Image 1: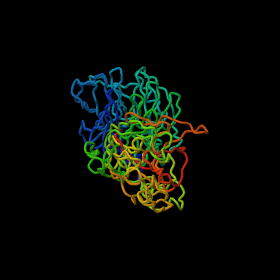
Image 2 (image 1 turned 90 degrees about the vertical axis):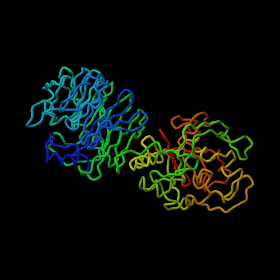
Image 3 (image 1 turned 180 degrees about the horizontal axis):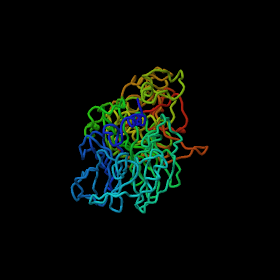
Image 4 (image 1 turned 90 degrees about the horizontal axis):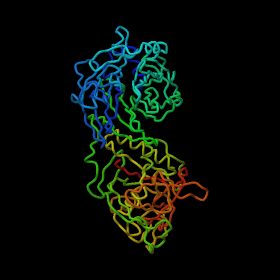
Length: 578
Protein backbone atom coordinates (compact mmCIF):
# COMPACT_ATOMS: atom_id res chain seq x y z
CA UNK A 1 0.00 0.00 0.00
CA UNK A 2 1.23 3.48 -0.81
CA UNK A 3 1.87 5.74 2.13
CA UNK A 4 0.00 9.00 2.48
CA UNK A 5 3.12 11.05 1.72
CA UNK A 6 4.21 9.10 -1.36
CA UNK A 7 0.65 9.32 -2.69
CA UNK A 8 0.54 13.08 -2.14
CA UNK A 9 3.97 13.60 -3.70
CA UNK A 10 2.77 11.75 -6.79
CA UNK A 11 -0.31 13.95 -6.94
CA UNK A 12 1.70 17.11 -6.44
CA UNK A 13 3.73 16.29 -9.53
CA UNK A 14 0.52 16.34 -11.59
CA UNK A 15 -1.60 19.08 -10.01
CA UNK A 16 -1.28 22.46 -8.35
CA UNK A 17 -2.47 22.74 -4.74
CA UNK A 18 -5.46 24.78 -5.86
CA UNK A 19 -6.68 21.97 -8.12
CA UNK A 20 -6.31 19.12 -5.62
CA UNK A 21 -9.86 18.00 -4.95
CA UNK A 22 -11.23 17.06 -1.55
CA UNK A 23 -10.99 13.38 -2.39
CA UNK A 24 -7.35 13.66 -3.51
CA UNK A 25 -5.96 13.86 0.02
CA UNK A 26 -7.45 13.64 3.50
CA UNK A 27 -8.31 16.62 5.66
CA UNK A 28 -6.60 17.59 8.88
CA UNK A 29 -9.35 19.54 10.63
CA UNK A 30 -10.05 18.64 14.26
CA UNK A 31 -11.11 20.93 17.14
CA UNK A 32 -12.55 20.45 20.64
CA UNK A 33 -14.95 22.91 22.26
CA UNK A 34 -15.11 23.74 25.97
CA UNK A 35 -17.84 21.12 26.51
CA UNK A 36 -15.54 18.37 25.24
CA UNK A 37 -17.30 17.89 21.89
CA UNK A 38 -14.89 16.85 19.14
CA UNK A 39 -15.43 18.13 15.60
CA UNK A 40 -13.46 16.69 12.68
CA UNK A 41 -13.43 16.66 8.91
CA UNK A 42 -14.47 13.43 7.23
CA UNK A 43 -13.10 13.92 3.74
CA UNK A 44 -15.77 12.98 1.24
CA UNK A 45 -18.63 13.24 3.74
CA UNK A 46 -18.29 16.61 5.49
CA UNK A 47 -17.91 17.26 9.22
CA UNK A 48 -18.61 14.96 12.15
CA UNK A 49 -19.16 15.57 15.84
CA UNK A 50 -18.29 13.19 18.69
CA UNK A 51 -20.06 14.29 21.85
CA UNK A 52 -18.89 13.69 25.43
CA UNK A 53 -20.78 10.37 25.49
CA UNK A 54 -19.01 9.15 22.34
CA UNK A 55 -22.00 9.51 20.02
CA UNK A 56 -21.23 10.45 16.41
CA UNK A 57 -23.43 12.76 14.37
CA UNK A 58 -22.69 14.50 11.09
CA UNK A 59 -23.19 18.25 11.49
CA UNK A 60 -22.41 19.10 7.86
CA UNK A 61 -22.67 17.02 4.69
CA UNK A 62 -20.31 17.75 1.84
CA UNK A 63 -18.23 15.89 -0.75
CA UNK A 64 -15.11 17.65 0.50
CA UNK A 65 -13.71 18.21 3.95
CA UNK A 66 -10.26 19.62 4.75
CA UNK A 67 -10.18 22.11 7.61
CA UNK A 68 -12.24 23.21 10.63
CA UNK A 69 -11.83 26.29 12.80
CA UNK A 70 -13.49 27.06 16.13
CA UNK A 71 -14.44 30.70 16.61
CA UNK A 72 -14.81 30.78 20.41
CA UNK A 73 -16.19 34.33 20.64
CA UNK A 74 -18.43 34.09 17.59
CA UNK A 75 -16.75 36.87 15.63
CA UNK A 76 -17.78 35.17 12.38
CA UNK A 77 -21.21 34.05 13.59
CA UNK A 78 -22.91 36.10 10.88
CA UNK A 79 -20.36 35.41 8.13
CA UNK A 80 -21.82 34.13 4.88
CA UNK A 81 -21.23 34.19 1.16
CA UNK A 82 -17.43 33.83 1.11
CA UNK A 83 -15.49 31.20 -0.82
CA UNK A 84 -13.00 30.37 1.92
CA UNK A 85 -15.25 28.61 4.43
CA UNK A 86 -18.83 27.80 5.39
CA UNK A 87 -20.41 28.55 8.75
CA UNK A 88 -22.01 25.32 9.94
CA UNK A 89 -23.52 26.58 13.19
CA UNK A 90 -26.63 28.77 13.38
CA UNK A 91 -26.21 32.49 12.85
CA UNK A 92 -25.20 34.16 16.09
CA UNK A 93 -24.03 30.89 17.68
CA UNK A 94 -21.12 31.05 20.11
CA UNK A 95 -18.76 29.30 19.59
CA UNK A 96 -19.03 29.35 15.81
CA UNK A 97 -17.78 26.41 13.77
CA UNK A 98 -16.21 27.19 10.40
CA UNK A 99 -15.69 24.52 7.76
CA UNK A 100 -13.46 24.58 4.68
CA UNK A 101 -14.21 22.04 1.97
CA UNK A 102 -10.83 22.71 0.37
CA UNK A 103 -8.73 25.84 0.58
CA UNK A 104 -5.96 26.14 3.15
CA UNK A 105 -5.37 25.88 6.92
CA UNK A 106 -7.28 28.49 8.91
CA UNK A 107 -7.65 29.64 12.52
CA UNK A 108 -9.68 32.31 14.31
CA UNK A 109 -7.42 34.24 16.65
CA UNK A 110 -8.20 35.95 19.94
CA UNK A 111 -8.15 39.33 18.15
CA UNK A 112 -11.37 38.32 16.38
CA UNK A 113 -9.77 37.91 12.95
CA UNK A 114 -9.32 34.79 10.86
CA UNK A 115 -5.90 33.82 9.49
CA UNK A 116 -5.28 31.37 6.67
CA UNK A 117 -2.49 30.03 4.47
CA UNK A 118 -2.34 31.97 1.23
CA UNK A 119 -0.31 32.77 -1.85
CA UNK A 120 0.30 30.49 -4.81
CA UNK A 121 1.99 30.76 -8.24
CA UNK A 122 -0.42 32.46 -10.59
CA UNK A 123 -2.46 34.00 -7.77
CA UNK A 124 -2.11 37.00 -5.50
CA UNK A 125 -0.96 36.82 -1.88
CA UNK A 126 -4.50 36.48 -0.52
CA UNK A 127 -5.43 33.50 -2.68
CA UNK A 128 -5.73 30.35 -0.49
CA UNK A 129 -2.43 28.54 -0.69
CA UNK A 130 0.73 28.10 1.32
CA UNK A 131 3.38 30.75 0.60
CA UNK A 132 2.34 33.28 3.27
CA UNK A 133 -0.53 34.24 5.64
CA UNK A 134 -3.60 36.41 5.09
CA UNK A 135 -5.78 38.04 7.74
CA UNK A 136 -9.55 38.22 7.21
CA UNK A 137 -11.74 40.47 9.36
CA UNK A 138 -15.33 39.49 10.23
CA UNK A 139 -16.61 41.83 7.51
CA UNK A 140 -14.70 39.79 4.90
CA UNK A 141 -11.83 42.22 4.27
CA UNK A 142 -8.54 40.47 3.44
CA UNK A 143 -5.02 41.84 3.94
CA UNK A 144 -1.55 40.30 3.72
CA UNK A 145 -0.69 39.66 7.36
CA UNK A 146 3.09 39.46 7.52
CA UNK A 147 5.48 39.96 4.59
CA UNK A 148 8.18 38.41 6.78
CA UNK A 149 6.32 35.06 6.70
CA UNK A 150 6.55 34.96 2.91
CA UNK A 151 10.27 35.76 2.97
CA UNK A 152 11.00 33.17 5.66
CA UNK A 153 9.08 30.39 3.93
CA UNK A 154 10.80 31.09 0.64
CA UNK A 155 14.22 31.09 2.31
CA UNK A 156 13.52 27.75 4.05
CA UNK A 157 11.87 26.18 1.01
CA UNK A 158 8.77 25.45 3.08
CA UNK A 159 5.03 26.15 2.93
CA UNK A 160 2.01 26.44 5.23
CA UNK A 161 0.50 23.02 5.98
CA UNK A 162 -1.05 23.71 9.40
CA UNK A 163 -2.04 26.67 11.54
CA UNK A 164 -2.79 27.21 15.24
CA UNK A 165 -2.87 30.06 17.77
CA UNK A 166 -1.94 30.23 21.45
CA UNK A 167 -3.82 32.09 24.17
CA UNK A 168 -1.73 35.24 23.60
CA UNK A 169 -2.61 35.36 19.91
CA UNK A 170 0.74 34.18 18.58
CA UNK A 171 0.32 32.06 15.45
CA UNK A 172 2.12 28.74 15.03
CA UNK A 173 2.70 27.54 11.49
CA UNK A 174 3.36 23.94 10.54
CA UNK A 175 5.43 23.32 7.43
CA UNK A 176 6.50 19.98 5.93
CA UNK A 177 9.76 20.23 7.90
CA UNK A 178 9.54 23.33 10.10
CA UNK A 179 7.59 25.11 12.82
CA UNK A 180 7.34 28.90 12.72
CA UNK A 181 6.04 31.28 15.38
CA UNK A 182 4.45 34.54 14.19
CA UNK A 183 3.63 37.28 16.69
CA UNK A 184 0.79 39.73 16.22
CA UNK A 185 3.25 42.41 15.10
CA UNK A 186 4.24 40.12 12.20
CA UNK A 187 7.70 39.14 13.45
CA UNK A 188 8.68 35.56 12.68
CA UNK A 189 10.72 33.10 14.73
CA UNK A 190 11.80 29.72 13.39
CA UNK A 191 11.17 27.32 16.28
CA UNK A 192 12.82 24.44 14.42
CA UNK A 193 14.06 23.65 10.91
CA UNK A 194 14.51 21.02 9.72
CA UNK A 195 12.30 18.76 11.84
CA UNK A 196 14.11 15.48 12.46
CA UNK A 197 12.04 12.53 13.68
CA UNK A 198 14.60 10.04 14.97
CA UNK A 199 12.32 7.02 15.01
CA UNK A 200 10.72 7.71 11.62
CA UNK A 201 10.25 4.38 9.84
CA UNK A 202 9.61 5.78 6.39
CA UNK A 203 12.13 7.16 3.88
CA UNK A 204 10.27 8.69 0.91
CA UNK A 205 11.87 9.59 -2.37
CA UNK A 206 13.33 13.06 -2.56
CA UNK A 207 10.89 15.79 -3.57
CA UNK A 208 11.56 19.38 -4.50
CA UNK A 209 7.96 20.41 -3.79
CA UNK A 210 7.56 23.03 -1.09
CA UNK A 211 4.23 21.47 -0.17
CA UNK A 212 5.05 17.76 -0.05
CA UNK A 213 8.37 16.59 1.37
CA UNK A 214 9.60 14.63 4.38
CA UNK A 215 8.81 14.39 7.18
CA UNK A 216 5.58 16.21 6.14
CA UNK A 217 4.01 17.87 9.18
CA UNK A 218 0.34 18.73 8.85
CA UNK A 219 -2.18 19.76 11.51
CA UNK A 220 -0.87 21.13 14.82
CA UNK A 221 -1.98 22.69 18.08
CA UNK A 222 -0.23 24.42 20.95
CA UNK A 223 -0.59 24.24 24.74
CA UNK A 224 -0.77 27.20 27.10
CA UNK A 225 2.91 26.63 27.89
CA UNK A 226 3.91 26.92 24.23
CA UNK A 227 4.46 23.21 23.56
CA UNK A 228 3.49 22.22 20.02
CA UNK A 229 1.89 18.90 19.08
CA UNK A 230 1.96 18.11 15.36
CA UNK A 231 0.84 15.28 13.11
CA UNK A 232 3.75 13.96 11.03
CA UNK A 233 2.10 12.19 8.12
CA UNK A 234 5.32 11.00 6.49
CA UNK A 235 6.46 9.24 9.67
CA UNK A 236 3.04 8.02 10.83
CA UNK A 237 3.42 9.69 14.22
CA UNK A 238 2.57 12.65 16.43
CA UNK A 239 5.43 14.67 17.86
CA UNK A 240 5.77 17.05 20.78
CA UNK A 241 8.01 20.04 20.14
CA UNK A 242 9.18 22.08 23.11
CA UNK A 243 9.51 25.89 22.95
CA UNK A 244 13.25 25.28 22.58
CA UNK A 245 12.72 23.07 19.53
CA UNK A 246 13.24 19.63 21.09
CA UNK A 247 11.32 16.95 19.15
CA UNK A 248 9.82 13.89 20.87
CA UNK A 249 7.54 11.24 19.37
CA UNK A 250 4.53 10.75 21.65
CA UNK A 251 2.32 8.50 19.52
CA UNK A 252 2.83 6.10 16.61
CA UNK A 253 0.16 5.15 14.08
CA UNK A 254 0.26 1.57 12.84
CA UNK A 255 -0.33 0.80 9.19
CA UNK A 256 -2.52 1.64 7.39
CA UNK A 257 -3.33 4.73 9.51
CA UNK A 258 -1.72 8.15 8.93
CA UNK A 259 -2.12 11.08 11.38
CA UNK A 260 -3.21 14.33 9.76
CA UNK A 261 -4.42 16.64 12.53
CA UNK A 262 -4.29 17.27 16.29
CA UNK A 263 -6.18 19.31 18.88
CA UNK A 264 -5.14 19.97 22.48
CA UNK A 265 -7.82 20.25 25.16
CA UNK A 266 -7.35 20.22 28.95
CA UNK A 267 -4.06 18.36 28.85
CA UNK A 268 -5.28 15.74 26.35
CA UNK A 269 -4.29 15.46 22.70
CA UNK A 270 -6.91 14.45 20.13
CA UNK A 271 -5.57 12.94 16.91
CA UNK A 272 -7.29 12.67 13.54
CA UNK A 273 -5.99 9.80 11.41
CA UNK A 274 -6.90 8.51 7.96
CA UNK A 275 -6.51 5.43 5.85
CA UNK A 276 -7.33 4.60 2.25
CA UNK A 277 -7.36 0.95 1.17
CA UNK A 278 -5.06 1.35 -1.84
CA UNK A 279 -4.36 5.07 -2.16
CA UNK A 280 -7.13 5.59 -4.69
CA UNK A 281 -8.88 8.98 -4.44
CA UNK A 282 -12.04 7.41 -5.82
CA UNK A 283 -12.29 4.86 -3.00
CA UNK A 284 -12.66 7.42 -0.25
CA UNK A 285 -10.77 8.27 2.92
CA UNK A 286 -11.78 6.68 6.23
CA UNK A 287 -11.07 8.54 9.51
CA UNK A 288 -10.24 7.48 13.04
CA UNK A 289 -10.06 9.72 16.12
CA UNK A 290 -7.85 8.83 19.09
CA UNK A 291 -7.12 10.58 22.38
CA UNK A 292 -3.72 10.69 24.11
CA UNK A 293 -3.95 11.29 27.85
CA UNK A 294 -1.36 12.99 30.09
CA UNK A 295 -0.40 9.53 31.39
CA UNK A 296 0.36 8.29 27.87
CA UNK A 297 -2.79 6.18 27.63
CA UNK A 298 -4.31 6.11 24.15
CA UNK A 299 -8.09 5.76 23.70
CA UNK A 300 -9.85 5.23 20.39
CA UNK A 301 -12.89 7.53 20.30
CA UNK A 302 -14.11 6.59 16.85
CA UNK A 303 -13.23 4.41 13.89
CA UNK A 304 -15.48 4.76 10.87
CA UNK A 305 -16.28 1.31 9.53
CA UNK A 306 -15.18 0.56 5.95
CA UNK A 307 -18.45 -0.89 4.70
CA UNK A 308 -21.02 1.87 5.07
CA UNK A 309 -19.06 4.76 6.53
CA UNK A 310 -20.79 4.55 9.91
CA UNK A 311 -19.40 3.59 13.32
CA UNK A 312 -20.48 0.60 15.33
CA UNK A 313 -23.74 1.24 17.15
CA UNK A 314 -23.27 1.42 20.89
CA UNK A 315 -26.86 0.91 22.01
CA UNK A 316 -27.12 -2.73 20.95
CA UNK A 317 -23.70 -3.80 22.17
CA UNK A 318 -24.22 -4.65 25.88
CA UNK A 319 -25.71 -8.04 26.68
CA UNK A 320 -29.19 -8.44 28.13
CA UNK A 321 -28.48 -11.30 30.55
CA UNK A 322 -25.56 -13.19 32.06
CA UNK A 323 -23.94 -15.58 29.61
CA UNK A 324 -25.12 -13.84 26.43
CA UNK A 325 -22.53 -14.39 23.70
CA UNK A 326 -21.12 -12.28 20.90
CA UNK A 327 -17.88 -11.87 18.96
CA UNK A 328 -15.64 -8.85 18.46
CA UNK A 329 -12.17 -8.73 16.97
CA UNK A 330 -12.43 -12.47 16.34
CA UNK A 331 -12.74 -13.16 20.09
CA UNK A 332 -15.78 -15.00 21.46
CA UNK A 333 -17.19 -13.19 24.48
CA UNK A 334 -19.68 -13.84 27.30
CA UNK A 335 -21.68 -11.10 29.04
CA UNK A 336 -21.08 -10.45 32.74
CA UNK A 337 -23.81 -8.09 34.01
CA UNK A 338 -23.35 -5.36 36.61
CA UNK A 339 -23.82 -6.57 40.18
CA UNK A 340 -22.54 -7.04 43.73
CA UNK A 341 -20.61 -9.93 45.24
CA UNK A 342 -18.33 -10.89 48.13
CA UNK A 343 -14.77 -10.99 46.86
CA UNK A 344 -12.38 -13.32 48.69
CA UNK A 345 -12.98 -16.46 50.76
CA UNK A 346 -14.82 -17.10 54.05
CA UNK A 347 -12.68 -18.04 57.03
CA UNK A 348 -13.75 -21.67 57.03
CA UNK A 349 -12.91 -22.41 53.39
CA UNK A 350 -10.42 -25.33 53.11
CA UNK A 351 -6.93 -24.36 51.86
CA UNK A 352 -7.69 -20.66 52.38
CA UNK A 353 -4.61 -18.42 52.06
CA UNK A 354 -3.62 -14.98 53.44
CA UNK A 355 -4.85 -12.00 51.43
CA UNK A 356 -8.30 -13.46 50.84
CA UNK A 357 -10.29 -11.61 53.55
CA UNK A 358 -13.71 -10.93 52.09
CA UNK A 359 -14.79 -7.48 50.90
CA UNK A 360 -18.00 -6.34 49.25
CA UNK A 361 -17.56 -5.23 45.66
CA UNK A 362 -20.02 -3.48 43.36
CA UNK A 363 -19.41 -3.59 39.62
CA UNK A 364 -21.51 -0.76 38.24
CA UNK A 365 -20.97 -1.66 34.58
CA UNK A 366 -21.45 -4.94 32.81
CA UNK A 367 -18.58 -6.22 30.68
CA UNK A 368 -17.79 -8.86 28.10
CA UNK A 369 -15.22 -11.51 29.07
CA UNK A 370 -13.37 -13.85 26.77
CA UNK A 371 -15.23 -17.16 26.61
CA UNK A 372 -11.85 -18.86 26.37
CA UNK A 373 -8.27 -18.07 27.25
CA UNK A 374 -6.52 -16.30 24.37
CA UNK A 375 -5.19 -18.96 22.03
CA UNK A 376 -1.94 -19.18 20.12
CA UNK A 377 -3.89 -18.80 16.89
CA UNK A 378 -5.54 -15.60 18.10
CA UNK A 379 -2.20 -14.22 19.26
CA UNK A 380 -0.60 -14.86 15.87
CA UNK A 381 -3.54 -13.28 14.07
CA UNK A 382 -3.43 -10.11 16.19
CA UNK A 383 0.27 -9.69 16.98
CA UNK A 384 2.25 -12.09 14.82
CA UNK A 385 5.07 -14.06 16.40
CA UNK A 386 4.32 -15.93 19.62
CA UNK A 387 5.66 -14.14 22.70
CA UNK A 388 8.03 -16.82 24.01
CA UNK A 389 9.58 -20.22 23.44
CA UNK A 390 7.38 -23.27 23.02
CA UNK A 391 7.70 -26.02 25.61
CA UNK A 392 6.52 -29.60 25.86
CA UNK A 393 4.15 -28.70 28.69
CA UNK A 394 2.67 -25.63 27.05
CA UNK A 395 2.43 -27.33 23.67
CA UNK A 396 1.91 -25.93 20.20
CA UNK A 397 -1.36 -25.43 18.36
CA UNK A 398 -3.78 -22.69 17.32
CA UNK A 399 -6.41 -23.99 19.79
CA UNK A 400 -4.02 -24.16 22.74
CA UNK A 401 -3.71 -21.18 25.08
CA UNK A 402 -0.89 -18.74 24.44
CA UNK A 403 1.79 -18.78 27.17
CA UNK A 404 5.23 -17.40 28.02
CA UNK A 405 3.67 -13.95 27.75
CA UNK A 406 4.70 -11.15 30.12
CA UNK A 407 2.48 -8.36 31.37
CA UNK A 408 3.58 -5.69 28.86
CA UNK A 409 3.01 -8.07 25.96
CA UNK A 410 -0.43 -8.92 27.31
CA UNK A 411 -1.39 -5.25 27.46
CA UNK A 412 0.00 -4.64 23.97
CA UNK A 413 -2.16 -7.50 22.68
CA UNK A 414 -5.25 -5.82 24.17
CA UNK A 415 -4.44 -2.50 22.52
CA UNK A 416 -3.89 -4.09 19.12
CA UNK A 417 -7.03 -6.19 19.47
CA UNK A 418 -9.00 -3.02 20.28
CA UNK A 419 -7.76 -1.33 17.11
CA UNK A 420 -8.68 -4.34 14.98
CA UNK A 421 -12.14 -4.59 16.53
CA UNK A 422 -12.79 -0.86 16.12
CA UNK A 423 -11.65 -0.93 12.50
CA UNK A 424 -13.99 -3.83 11.74
CA UNK A 425 -16.94 -1.98 13.27
CA UNK A 426 -17.57 -4.87 15.68
CA UNK A 427 -16.50 -2.92 18.79
CA UNK A 428 -18.05 0.51 19.55
CA UNK A 429 -15.66 3.43 19.76
CA UNK A 430 -16.26 3.88 23.50
CA UNK A 431 -15.37 0.26 24.34
CA UNK A 432 -11.92 -1.30 24.54
CA UNK A 433 -10.24 -4.60 25.30
CA UNK A 434 -8.22 -4.86 28.52
CA UNK A 435 -6.92 -7.37 30.97
CA UNK A 436 -9.54 -7.90 33.69
CA UNK A 437 -9.19 -6.37 37.12
CA UNK A 438 -9.03 -8.88 39.97
CA UNK A 439 -12.61 -7.95 40.87
CA UNK A 440 -13.85 -8.53 37.33
CA UNK A 441 -11.99 -11.83 37.09
CA UNK A 442 -13.32 -13.27 40.38
CA UNK A 443 -16.84 -12.01 39.68
CA UNK A 444 -16.83 -13.71 36.27
CA UNK A 445 -15.24 -16.85 37.67
CA UNK A 446 -17.87 -17.20 40.39
CA UNK A 447 -20.70 -16.55 37.92
CA UNK A 448 -23.13 -15.97 40.77
CA UNK A 449 -21.82 -18.74 43.06
CA UNK A 450 -20.57 -18.35 46.63
CA UNK A 451 -18.84 -21.74 46.86
CA UNK A 452 -15.10 -22.35 46.74
CA UNK A 453 -15.24 -22.93 42.97
CA UNK A 454 -17.84 -22.24 40.32
CA UNK A 455 -18.62 -25.98 40.36
CA UNK A 456 -19.16 -26.18 44.11
CA UNK A 457 -17.00 -26.80 47.18
CA UNK A 458 -15.09 -29.64 45.54
CA UNK A 459 -13.05 -29.88 42.33
CA UNK A 460 -11.15 -32.58 40.48
CA UNK A 461 -9.22 -32.98 37.24
CA UNK A 462 -12.30 -34.07 35.33
CA UNK A 463 -13.78 -30.59 35.83
CA UNK A 464 -10.60 -28.61 35.13
CA UNK A 465 -7.13 -29.16 33.70
CA UNK A 466 -5.21 -29.40 36.99
CA UNK A 467 -2.89 -31.95 38.55
CA UNK A 468 -4.46 -35.17 39.73
CA UNK A 469 -4.76 -34.25 43.41
CA UNK A 470 -8.42 -33.19 43.90
CA UNK A 471 -9.74 -30.43 46.16
CA UNK A 472 -11.65 -30.99 49.38
CA UNK A 473 -12.34 -34.70 49.01
CA UNK A 474 -13.46 -34.79 45.39
CA UNK A 475 -13.03 -38.01 43.44
CA UNK A 476 -9.54 -38.36 41.93
CA UNK A 477 -9.17 -38.04 38.18
CA UNK A 478 -6.50 -38.24 35.47
CA UNK A 479 -3.75 -35.61 35.13
CA UNK A 480 -2.59 -34.44 31.70
CA UNK A 481 0.59 -32.74 32.94
CA UNK A 482 0.32 -30.29 30.03
CA UNK A 483 -1.92 -27.55 28.65
CA UNK A 484 -4.81 -28.57 26.45
CA UNK A 485 -7.15 -27.13 23.84
CA UNK A 486 -9.28 -24.32 25.27
CA UNK A 487 -12.86 -25.31 26.02
CA UNK A 488 -12.02 -28.95 26.67
CA UNK A 489 -13.57 -28.79 30.15
CA UNK A 490 -17.05 -27.68 31.29
CA UNK A 491 -18.01 -24.00 31.28
CA UNK A 492 -19.27 -22.17 34.36
CA UNK A 493 -22.82 -20.81 34.61
CA UNK A 494 -21.96 -17.78 32.46
CA UNK A 495 -20.43 -19.82 29.64
CA UNK A 496 -16.77 -19.22 30.54
CA UNK A 497 -14.34 -22.11 30.09
CA UNK A 498 -11.08 -22.79 31.94
CA UNK A 499 -11.56 -20.22 34.68
CA UNK A 500 -10.14 -23.08 36.76
CA UNK A 501 -7.03 -24.73 35.36
CA UNK A 502 -5.18 -24.92 32.02
CA UNK A 503 -3.11 -21.69 32.33
CA UNK A 504 -2.93 -18.94 34.95
CA UNK A 505 -4.17 -15.56 33.67
CA UNK A 506 -2.68 -12.08 34.12
CA UNK A 507 -4.89 -9.45 35.74
CA UNK A 508 -4.73 -5.69 35.29
CA UNK A 509 -4.06 -4.84 38.97
CA UNK A 510 -0.87 -4.43 40.90
CA UNK A 511 -0.82 -6.99 43.71
CA UNK A 512 -2.00 -5.64 47.07
CA UNK A 513 -1.97 -7.83 50.16
CA UNK A 514 -5.51 -6.72 51.00
CA UNK A 515 -8.29 -7.10 48.48
CA UNK A 516 -9.88 -3.88 47.22
CA UNK A 517 -13.56 -3.35 47.92
CA UNK A 518 -16.14 -0.77 46.97
CA UNK A 519 -17.33 0.24 43.51
CA UNK A 520 -15.38 -0.86 40.45
CA UNK A 521 -12.01 -1.36 42.20
CA UNK A 522 -9.10 -0.96 39.80
CA UNK A 523 -5.54 -1.07 41.16
CA UNK A 524 -3.82 -1.00 37.77
CA UNK A 525 -2.05 2.29 38.50
CA UNK A 526 -1.48 1.95 42.26
CA UNK A 527 1.56 -0.07 43.23
CA UNK A 528 0.85 -2.23 46.24
CA UNK A 529 2.72 -4.70 48.44
CA UNK A 530 6.48 -4.85 47.89
CA UNK A 531 8.21 -8.12 47.22
CA UNK A 532 11.12 -9.16 49.40
CA UNK A 533 13.62 -7.67 46.93
CA UNK A 534 11.78 -4.33 46.79
CA UNK A 535 10.06 -4.92 43.46
CA UNK A 536 6.33 -4.99 42.80
CA UNK A 537 4.15 -7.65 41.20
CA UNK A 538 1.01 -7.80 39.12
CA UNK A 539 -1.82 -10.09 40.11
CA UNK A 540 -2.59 -13.43 38.49
CA UNK A 541 -5.77 -15.44 38.82
CA UNK A 542 -6.89 -18.98 38.14
CA UNK A 543 -4.63 -21.99 38.16
CA UNK A 544 -2.77 -24.10 35.64
CA UNK A 545 -1.99 -27.62 34.50
CA UNK A 546 0.97 -27.37 36.92
CA UNK A 547 -1.21 -26.82 40.04
CA UNK A 548 -3.13 -29.06 42.41
CA UNK A 549 -6.88 -28.45 42.46
CA UNK A 550 -6.89 -26.41 45.69
CA UNK A 551 -5.23 -23.55 43.77
CA UNK A 552 -8.29 -23.39 41.49
CA UNK A 553 -10.51 -21.90 44.19
CA UNK A 554 -12.30 -18.79 42.90
CA UNK A 555 -10.66 -16.59 45.55
CA UNK A 556 -7.10 -17.88 45.11
CA UNK A 557 -4.61 -15.14 44.23
CA UNK A 558 -1.03 -15.14 42.99
CA UNK A 559 1.58 -12.48 42.32
CA UNK A 560 4.24 -12.30 39.61
CA UNK A 561 6.75 -9.67 38.52
CA UNK A 562 5.37 -8.11 35.31
CA UNK A 563 8.48 -8.72 33.21
CA UNK A 564 8.58 -12.45 33.92
CA UNK A 565 7.05 -15.18 31.80
CA UNK A 566 6.37 -18.90 32.21
CA UNK A 567 4.91 -21.72 30.15
CA UNK A 568 1.82 -21.96 32.37
CA UNK A 569 0.89 -18.23 32.30
CA UNK A 570 -1.45 -16.84 29.66
CA UNK A 571 -4.22 -14.25 29.37
CA UNK A 572 -7.96 -13.73 29.03
CA UNK A 573 -9.43 -10.41 27.89
CA UNK A 574 -12.44 -8.32 28.81
CA UNK A 575 -14.23 -5.72 26.70
CA UNK A 576 -15.28 -2.75 28.82
CA UNK A 577 -17.07 0.52 28.19
CA UNK A 578 -14.91 3.56 28.90
